[in-house]
Length: 424
Ligand SMILES: Cc1ncc(COP(=O)(O)O)c(C=O)c1O
Image (cartoon, rainbow, N blue to C red; front, side, top):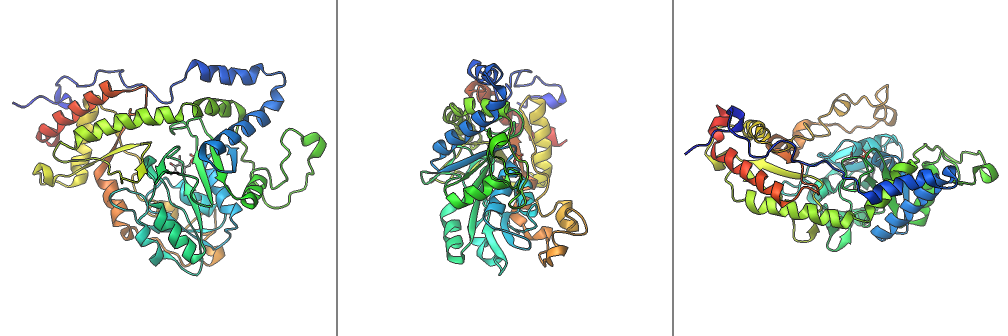
């Protein structure tokens, strides 16, 4: 017997107000932030918090150096700049990511060259990297998308063979692992985001740069501080006021850094709780016809920044496109109280800036570097297919737990079993 979908006036599966927001704030978080106000000299806290966070995160990752900055994009730009990538140099970037990955390249007048994704993991496909290399290629920038590591060994191998740098975009994958190694500790430098939604969240904006290389660290440190030698906390005595090269003001703020430091203490615990929620979803949703759940290669420790599901009309015996099924099912799931939605709407090369090749003006950086790189939307069929057929299941973060996940599964069952009602 068919059940009436909430979309058509039936009772919703997930009661209103049950999905708890991320990040949740504890008493320890409050104390950590208030301690910044309560310190003897608040002006000294910028140094105390940024150095403290940098040290603790470097230790967490197992690398020598970290710099706490004001965004993940800033951290990625610091990677590009500190590795000596410059005007006209090409950097390999996945066609599916948040576009800041490519923006960090453009910020240094370098040129992103996009490569399609692996259709199972949605990370860059290492097999497609070598054919995209040219005389101008200087680096590869894998993104550990949704909290799952890119397939790093073949990427590192191609980079080594061609003398290229590897920059890890770890904006979405704090604590994720690949063959036991930490994401962000495998390449030459890495950029993390602590923007509000991230698994290590500042509640606002923030980022972390990481590297094991002393010289790369020295350059990055200068780049984030106006191009000057950094003397945080000793400016009056020691600042030279001598820009040694072009730099930016990428310093992070102390209140959000205090909050991030407090949360770092329970990052692994939160990752484990989120993974438990997601494994439960996979176990049960994979039994439903027409629903595709995330593929996790054996060698990867997924931290599930995002949980994505795909829709397969054929498996449901439906003669509609995956996009139509996804869109209609999504509306029905929302009505049932499941927090679902879309993230990226198109591949990065399909975005206006790449289609027009109009960057920061006068066609630069393409025109001013005489770049011949072009962006054909059809060259990235897997990214396009992913974007047409998947949606995101939100509300997977703790303190949401298996009770909510159970309701989510029930709502998916109800919608898939009554999908004709949604498609009417
Ligand atoms: C994959 C990816 N790269 C880079 C960024 C940029 O980070 P931020 O927003 O902190 O600048 C983000 C996040 O927003 C991201 O998801």
